[in-house]
Length: 271
Image (cartoon, rainbow, N blue to C red; front, side, top):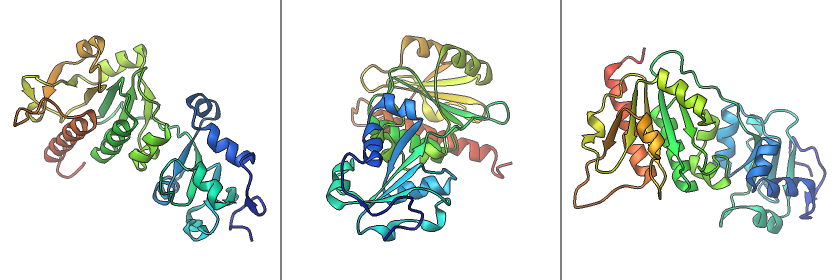
């Protein structure tokens, strides 16, 4: 019996099946770039993509888990294939698979920085997938307009980043930061805070109510000299008990939600 929306017969039992080889190939950054596609795993994560209006190229269901399919959200004609249980579990990137994997096109989301009071997050050589995904989730929740990543950062479409991002990839423009973009952001965002441990200015003393950027550096190297000079202020989170620093994801989330708090206070009606 075929799953509703399925374009192929029966159950996939071979690792050589094109659907399986496609998903496996997207473990590689170069293949994701070539295919302009990425893998989303888990019922909630796939549902997030569908609710955001994304149309999957392919959905794989573990045999016996057909009831998980959010058929009402699935665009007509979406290829849905069932996969033998052991083969599916080997394909999965988690210890306890939920029974659903989808391949989505990488979204083309354009930030609107020309109007209003944009808040931008710049990530400099952030290499830990979990930290990046957590920061993207926080950025989406805090109302960030766009996220820019410098060369040397982990690929935001990495499966571990996508899992930690929990749907943020479908809602946030994720863009590379090159010299031209850096200059354009300089002109648009007059206030650019660089998070640095030991800075004398507390993050909640910085004025986040206008167009602004937050720069978070990588776990090992911190913010580059170039981006440090690009910033207009260094900010820090005061810590007690001789704690030296927070990790990038926690620090970024704390600062972003302070920015969101200030913006709500300055514009309580949201107009």
